[in-house]
Image 1 (cartoon, one colour):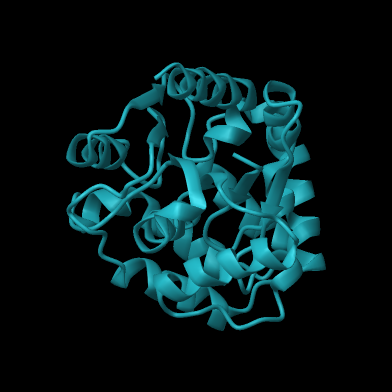
Image 2 (tube, helix red, strand yellow; image 1 turned 90 degrees about the vertical axis):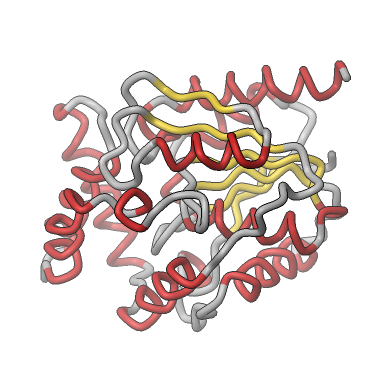
Length: 253
């Protein structure tokens, strides 16, 4: 494995990882940890988001190549990024030494009401229509994090600044949602070692979605006892430790 690639989720970008890349680097000091933005997000916010998951996966593959990175990679990805990683693993398993899917949900393994919890719909609507970036990000915080409330305003302030700096267009948001809604994973597991991570406190995606993928694809699953959807935000050390321990088991085989 030549590098770790990190992919975020819907409308999020590399800087939303916060301290997590440093935590992962501490566990893999000899390996580059590289964050890649999906088309339409982050440094690629001026690009058009593809409306389908194979195109998103291909764009990530091309971006890694453009950065001069050579496979095989370890890919760690969240939510929409996890869908793109599942498709990348299906289409080009030779590129990936292993993959970690965090807070993932895939058709046909879970029904729609678990892949997007109805209790989150109101917060998502408020986030979509709020005119103030800070107000939007407070709604996102509510449905993605279980960190103590005392941390909220610092994180929300950072996220609001990112939104102002690199805004994701409404069209790109809709195309990313459309790609996620349309994507159907293959019933058989990709020919890539997989680890599933989830948070028991996830308000956005029911943690049973990760359990369903783990069961159908015969992959290990670790569930954080209290974290929300954004497990690397809530407990970066826990995620980094879980990944390092799992990779050690792969090397021991």
